[in-house]
Image (cartoon, rainbow, N blue to C red; front, side, top):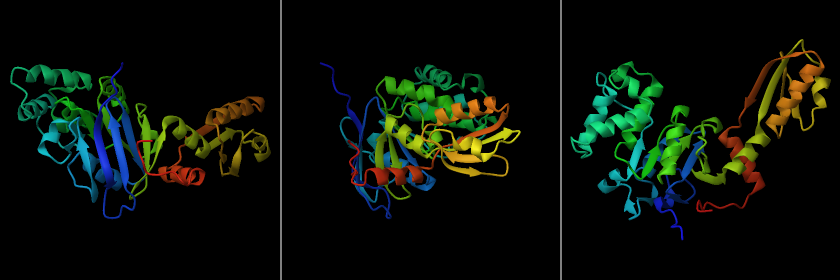
Length: 310
């Protein structure tokens, strides 16, 4: 019989800050990823700090690991790897040197340290800049270095306070595959990584809803705004017959509308351009804000509760 994955991060009756109005329960299993999405960067920063044990919640408690150690305890530092919102590495040092110092402070032996550091640098795509001064790296490379420092001790849980760049999506998949628990944040729908099993939609003060990827795709499809332009220009009547088109508006150089299926809308626009010997000169698909998703979800399921175990 296959053993159930352990709960590696848990929150009970959590209220993040003094303005929080609702309590939330949270359980993150090994081999899973939960992404907290909000338009409020401040709330995401505070929430991640609380879940990682660097800040105390206004109400409730957070525990980590199979033994449910309080996240604020010193022991939890070996269980939780933390990726801060503003990675800070001393200028003048190199990625290799920086990780060597961290390895020593984490108790990794001098014999094991060089191999461990080299391996994590290669895995995070930093092998070619291992000897480059940190102040010469771009922001993405600095984020990759901060990510490397967060996973250097092989923690059971990774908590990120900033959105993860796309070049690290493969590494997130690797961590899930070996049973790590991922707690990530996203400041827009577009920054939610593909590894997300569940997405917690958050307001400026609270964790509001937990939805799966299929529900997220459905909500986004119903709220997507599409803008298009043709050359030569087409009359508005040409677009009115597109099946499913909603809220069609004409702008100075084109049209803006909503559609429940972005892929069907794109296909219709392409066919319309070909049929009328026009060039489709602009096509933008704008994802809805987190607030818009929350508003839509609230209207659809007004009685949904705060239990994140659902």
